[in-house]
Image 1 (cartoon, rainbow, N blue to C red):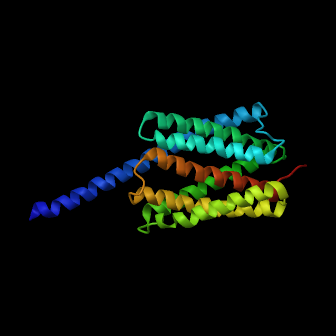
Image 2 (cartoon, rainbow, N blue to C red):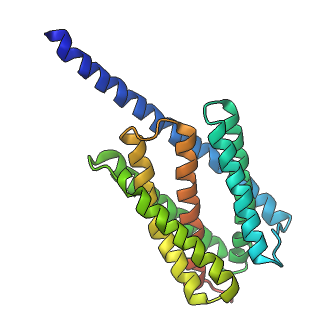
Image 3 (cartoon, helix red, strand yellow):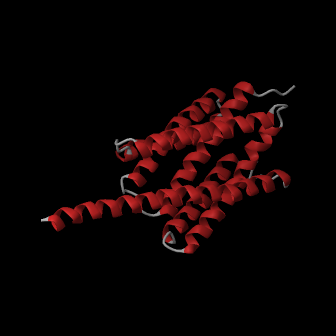
Length: 230
């Protein structure tokens, strides 16, 4: 009878250890992914990198194509070292893409402060929500379909505003994006904690995209409301 009770307990302990290992590896790889992101951003700023600036719609579609190509490759190789290589290559590419908004921010006299505030705010949001998702018993992984629908609508709004160029809509898009990707942090960390995601490379890709999108949109809002061109 003792063995009957021991087996479920042992299985629970093993499961918890695996989930904690995935979470630790995710955080470690996420921290590592910031290095190529920063490197890509610095290279982009120094080289005045521009991704078809004259054709915003084509540039956006091409960006999505390259990004989805990377993500497809990462998912195909997530069980090997090549998955890590592709992930780091993807984060370098995302750093290059980040350089454009960073150059705009640096055009403000308080640009450095705005970037630091966006980075600090993003870090605070991540730490707070990841802490909630990893300590509470509530499972947030069931909000995934709702959030995905929100992302689809967000992409439609972004494409529409490429043509209409409405400043108020751009600000609304950024505010909504921050809410959606903050909720995605709860979702993605909760999936790891509750065993829904068992691959740390896939988990890192998801969380990286959450953090990246929060930073970009928070910086956009800060530039709009706190930017000083004098």
